[in-house]
Image 1 (cartoon, rainbow, N blue to C red):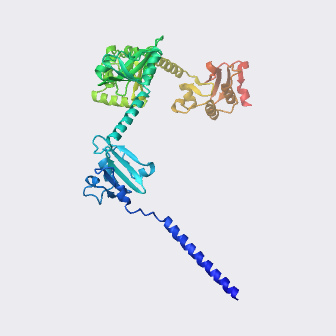
Image 2: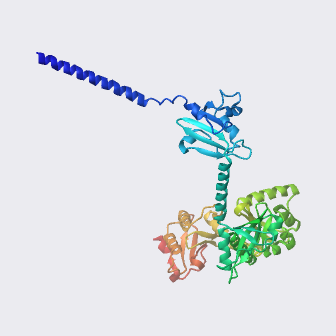
Image 3: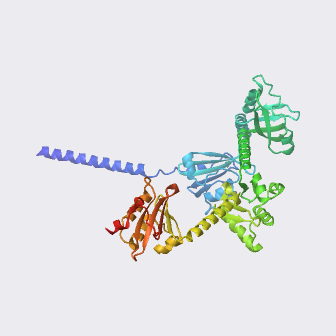
Amino acid sequence: MWVTDIMQQILSTDWLVLATLCAATAATAVWWLSPNPKPKGFEQDLLQGDGRSDAVFLFDDTTLIGWSSGARRFIGEQAETFSWANLREQLARSYPGLPQSPGFLKDVGPLVLSGTANAESREALCEWIDGVTRVQLRSTTSEEHNHSIDQELTTLRSAVHQAPYPVWLQSDDGAVTWSNLAYDDLSQKIRGRNVDFSEPLFTDLDDPMASGKPERISIPLPESKKKLWYNISTTETESGWLCHAVDVNAVVDAEIAQRNFVQTLAKTFAQLSIGLAIFDRNRQLVLFNPVLIDLTALPANFLSSRPNLLTFFDRLRDQRMMPEPKNYSSWRHQMADLLEAAAEGRYQETWSLPSGSVYSVSGRPHPDGAIAFLFEDITAEITLTRQFRSELEMGQSIMDQMDEAIAVFANDGTMTFSNAAYHDLWQMDPDGSFAKITIMDSSRVWQDMCAATPAWGEIRDFVAGSENRTAWWADVQLRSGTPLVCKVSAIQNGATMVSFRSPEPAPAPVDQQRFAITKQGK
């Protein structure tokens, strides 16, 4: 039994030790996870500056939580409402680069901002320290200031020396006293390896020195007809003229290519029989060809003066080279409509002039808001068309006077011609409908109005066929009992003429009949 008591005492002791260890571990975890309290005097240490006049500001996020005596002149009576935005509003002009938010410093680390000429202190130190943003406006010592200046000068010298375009200093007497690597490389490229760098590479600097504006100057390549082109800028300094050269060879080549292209276009346009007038986005005439002078009778000096679009068309109206408007008010409206239609590419009109000439005029949009007008003399074409139409009308009139009903079908089976006798006989007018009438449509009409005969199928095959197109005829009879002679003949271009007439007194030879009346009666 005493053994059992001893075991119980040991177990009780172990549980006590275990409970104590758990409590200690929990307390340690709570301490570890809780925010580290800032030591006493932490903010006071942060407010210490490098000098008595230094201004120091402390922020918790954007809220001001402390400031030095030197910072009071910035804060004034606004200590309770003063925030990071207020500080930045006062200092952003004097210290460019001051962050928009204090959280920026936590990510990028401390910043040292150099003050401008208007800044009271030479620099601002901004840093994030254990959750507190600290801004210190401080003055640097002469030694630090000189070191900073030396660093800046070294950086500037390196930047100018390594610049990709030539930079050099030239004295009033024309000697080069300093140059960067790009200038030296260009000098050796033009004059060889043993060049005297004091001799100026660009000798024509009088114009840019006098005008103060960049001037384009060329230098010839040795043993070549090519030239290198540069835009030269000069600035007068105490040590002489500081010169910069910018390579513009690509620009010059592009200008030459554009000029050659325009000349090629001009030569091409000069060979056209169509008059061309191109107006730029400001509606001024920028390009025309010689044919335009011949077609419009406008003087060359007038066209060369770059008239605007309205002046151009006003002059055409005065020269009676376009249809006369009813009145000047409607003319202005007409010009506005013309301009709008041309800009959209839908202007296309035929001008019938008082002289009897006929012009086709069209307007087309061009890149960058330009508009092109094309003038073509179509008088001969219109005259020929009118003459052809007149001949067609005369031929139609002659055919309409014939008693024989005639219809012509193209090789695709479409009816292309019929006369008045045909219309009267079959009670149809092909011209009265927009739909095309085919041999199938016609044969149905014939079949409906005539006694049964295999001739209609033979006619359809003849119109569609290309072989065995010997002329033939057949006797047919209307349902009213009127006999007709149907003749089928091949004409040019694969067309077929079908004619209907009353039978002649004398019968036709038997060997020319395809279907005799007696055969139709069987």
